[in-house]
Length: 179
Image (cartoon, rainbow, N blue to C red; front, side, top):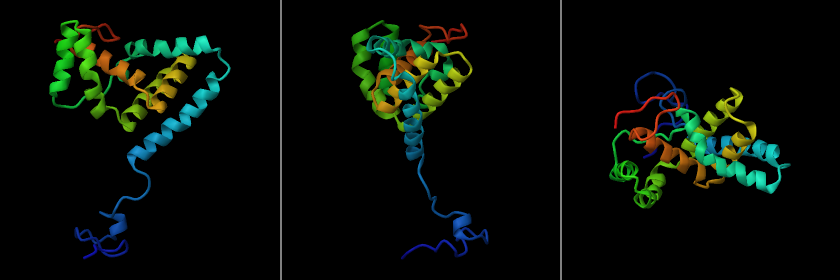
C-alpha cells in the first residue's frame, strides 16, 4: 500500500502537508553535492595550474604528503569507536613499523574515504588558501588530487592523523596528545 501523497496531511499528526513535514527529501543527496563541489573547484584549480611545467607540477603533488601538518582541520575524520584496523595502524606508528602501517591503510581508507570527507578536506584547503596560510598552487594540487579519487592526499591526512593521535607528532600548534 503506498504512503500518503505529498499534499495530504502528514501521518505524524503535525497537521502539515507531507511535503512540508516528514516527506521524502528531494533533490541531490550529500554525496552528489560533495562530488559537484569537488568537480567545480577542481576545474578552477586545473585552470590555475595549466601553465606550470611538468616538473613543478610533480613537485607540487609530492608536497601534498606534508600538507596535513599545516592545520588540524586537515586531519581525517575518524570513527567514534576504535576499529581493529585503526588500532593496528596506531600500533604500527608507535612501533615505527612502516610495513604494518602500509598493510592496514587500504582497509581503513575503504571505509573513511568518502566524497563527503574529500569535500570537507577541500573546504579546509580552500579556507587555508584564502587565509593565506597555503600557497594557491599547492591548494590547487590538493583540490585536484581530492577530486581525482586518487588516495595520495587523503592517505597523507590519515597518516598524519595517526601520528598526532598516538602522540608521535605534535599538533601544528605544538601540543602533543596523550597516547
